[in-house]
Figure 1 (spheres, chains in turn cyan, brown):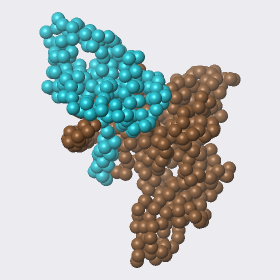
Figure 2: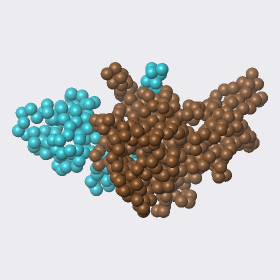
Figure 3: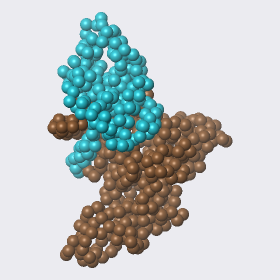
Figure 4: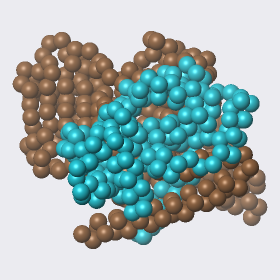
Length: 190
Length: 413
């Protein structure tokens, strides 16, 4: 009985994973991924085909729902969505851009880590978004000899109180290597 | 301890399956000349502390339950797995707007404020000492059936069936709690808020309000029990609202706040979602400015037996079972067709149950010719409203209530 339920749960999760189609590469794809996937599966985006006014309305609602966005970021994401997830099939220009993006070498591993873990949803290099700027973090830990392990623990386990009452979610899935890569990068942002 | 170990195992297994799937997806993507895939499929950020993991929620669901989205968590079982008079917990649909919070019932307090003479703070244990009752009531997500709309609407892709359930609920009448607080003149709406929260702290709370008349209807309740036990955590433990027959979003889960207002609550879950045009708009068109908030579900039915594609033998008998409901009305009749809707016969209705419970129906017929056969059901409520062939398109894809169809195969004996 329990085994059957467990198997069902796994099947259900797997079914949900099959609904996950990655975003079409193009200008703004990584930002769109980083921002939208904070709160919901990217499938909610890839399923949709909307006109520009509809995407603009959707972005307005998503900002209402708490998405942290600068006006520039909002414009970039809206343009990306209208181009690649418009009501009509992608334009030839969009398809060309997509092919070009696919041919380009994989971007910097740190950039990928930041995107994949939605770090940029709450942090930016040089200003506060929801969490502190990476630069502020680097500055605070500058004089601390044990900075790297402390920061690694914060990234992995999450935390609250060091920068305000807004909690940082944990990232338990990060490997040691990725964690170290991120820590080194953050501490270098002075 | 054992329980949490099991859940960790489940999560690990689910994660490794997911990794395997993603790896497979990535290799497919690398093969594709078009290179449509991003270098990596991004896993969403981890759930913050104080939440219940999806794997734990899904482990308590039936094998036929499928998740339509993992964040926010949504899922349902299709109609052929709803062949019960009372929906069991493991078949009840899930529709979160945010995360599933893990709450301590010992610390749970219900606050009543706004246009009342005596603002209240009632600990859960004290609330449970009030006069309680149990009733069977319908709950259905506004977007239930959304996938059937063309052109498609954005939002959770609910399949054409599923997204509803009719369990029994135990709790107190909201009217009794409001009477204790003393509703002041000028009150028009009652708003509810829960303890669920989002991944980012900027995510607003899910707050919805209902008109005072519906709030005072005695079946509208504050429930702590479902099907004889505590509410499961994903269904609102330890406390929720049940606004029977209305769109599910009115029935706020993890309830901790009630506010009596002089007008509908203003907020994104009232003004941006759960809205429907007053009069039909062109399919694919925009939401008109004078759209209204969704309230009671229109008349609807599902066929729960047989299932799509079931095989039968000539000379045997066909048993059809199903359920019919209408938000604020009773069900007067259900007609059945075995030829795709050309000819109709009345189904037998079960006795009327609780006011907001669905009404079960049965139908029986000999199977004398081989071939494919399409069963169609058509429910009519006590105000004369009948299910349509296809529901009226609307921008957010709500209220799909078309006649259900199930195709079966009759084989030669």
